[in-house]
Image 1: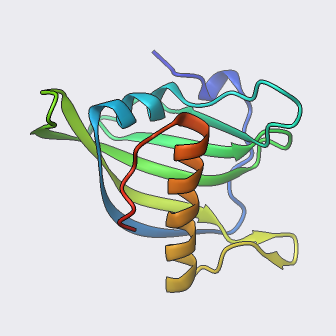
Image 2 (image 1 turned 135 degrees about the vertical axis):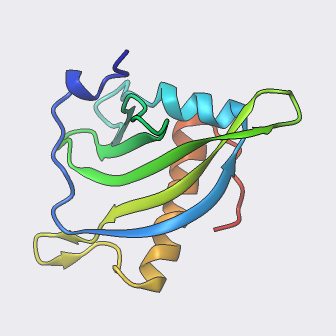
Length: 138
């Protein structure tokens, strides 16, 4: 089942930067990321959609600006064999991709400082939009 990416036309990152990440996700947070976030009002600025898992079981979570459909962040999420405290499968974010430019304006630095900033923004967005309990460890 496709979770929605093909139903919404998205504009990919133009100047992406990537970094590995090893951020564990609870079963609850993983489910929330898969469910995504759809804007409810014109003032809502974000949209989040999940791809179907690939052959390795990894899922891409796409976080975009709602009006332009421009991708700002992509999270590669991998299912883990471990169990969380509730006995459900856990996952972890294994990679983050972020947009570095908007026209001639630097949005998030592609270097180490930008990586830390992108990770902080993702945690804040996932908490605010999808009520995730993600770790502060970025």
